[in-house]
Image (tube, rainbow, N blue to C red):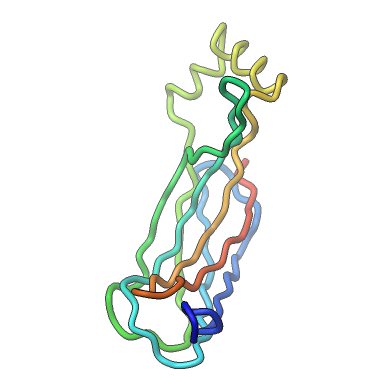
Length: 143
């Protein structure tokens, strides 16, 4: 196959698409390969991204990442892999930042669109050497 296109597919089946801060995200990564594949790693990640505006330019910035390695370098075949991820927890600094003057500034920045809410995604990846990775990205809500 050219550059790994058509090598297989992946699906993520989550127990919940809406979790609380500090909660657990569990599910199953389903890998369907056309033939066995040598890969560097099979992983699932929880990432948080946020749109930020600086000097008139808007870009998406990573603000959270938690990675769970489901398997290391080996030959992979079709199968199901269970996983559990930890949703982020607000730190004491974040809680204090939402209070007082800092909280007012943050609220104003959100209102003006300079800072947007954090968008969370669960991403599964089969890292294939010398080829396009096989991956799946699913959006979830963390409240």
